[in-house]
Image (cartoon, helix red, strand yellow):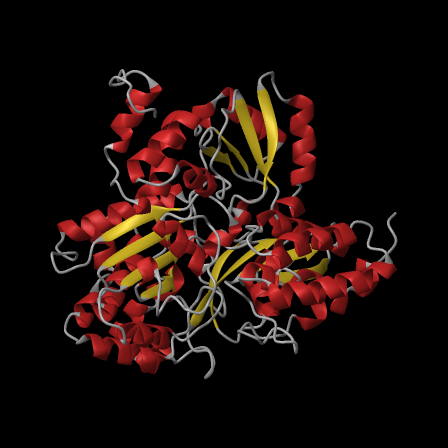
Length: 567
């Protein structure tokens, strides 16, 4: 926008922008929502668009550009023609994504391009292709080409959960797949909002005490005691805030999407119970930019809960915020920066969010799965919650199993269940004709484990004697069709690409690790060891601190395969 111009024609880009921007506050916090809305309206972010948004939210033009370029899903040039985005996440590679790309490149119609995408988070239905706002799951070249010719004839699979299997304890998944997720009556008939009713009979301190007695740990991957975080935030005067981390941008993890899509009222009830305990001034639910169906169903659930009076004048405002790409966006301080309207980069800590979060005020950040445990605790009681799991890690955990298994999907198991039971009994074991080579636990910054360790209990710090953690619950089974060296290179490349670039150890170190892994020379071991130590010790956030783990675990368990001479 340039000052001094006459009012723009409503049919021009500037006129359409002016109309669009009237729906956003003239505050920095609305910067990312405005950028996302503009891209949805115009297909990309032009210079005119960026200038107009900068003027509207009162942020310097250079800063708007800096914010926009920190998100991988925002585009600054048009994408002509049809695009086939083939997922190249680890699970899709195991399912044949490379062969699919080759087949599509050799048979694609004119005007259609084939591009790679790091992950579409549909790992249980690999390989996956995205085009024109729709997905082709378990894709073949034939099904993708058919979708091009007959767009209305191909629809993405609805997320599902399998019938409960031996060793599962269904608490969070109890209603998933057995109710109409878009009907609040169906959820209420199966017990939804009974926990909220109980919470409204209690004082905030009583709710916090019940959660403390349950010994509920966060389910986002760090496993921090929930009540400890709540009490630290409540120790500060108001205003304080509640942020729900529904970003889930980690390849191999799709549990939160499953919960929200199949039982959104479970999350709404958990949010309302947490709000009763924390007493925030406002609540922000930060949903991954690609999780459109989850966001849509959550929005409807919030609306229906409001119509039913479950959300009333005494409830803090609840706002859904969308991310715009980037693995680092799952890190809690990055979410705060994103909502504040700054670049998607982590903050120095301390101070921690419980002391200085959104706008410098105390803030609780809880994961979706964490909050979904609250209704059970309030209805059944802390003792019932601790009745399964282990004394140190009570309750159940959602695990996402994908890769070379017969029945990929989301399963709910008590902490302490062995990896072998999860893979062989729940997920049906390796696919016919393949042999298990390794298991990746904890996402692209996780640990590679050999088959000999599958009797390890699934619990924080228990996967091996080095204290490996299961992270958010992603388990990718790797068969003998993919070498350990290729797996490590793929994961290292992902972490290098997803580095936000703020700190030198992660930005430069992960790229150097990828170079050193290029031919995996035996004399590269010392360089890789030194780089790993530096990256872990000096990186600003968890992405960098954990990025060397695939290499370090492969060095420990698969050194003979990691450093074998290239063929």
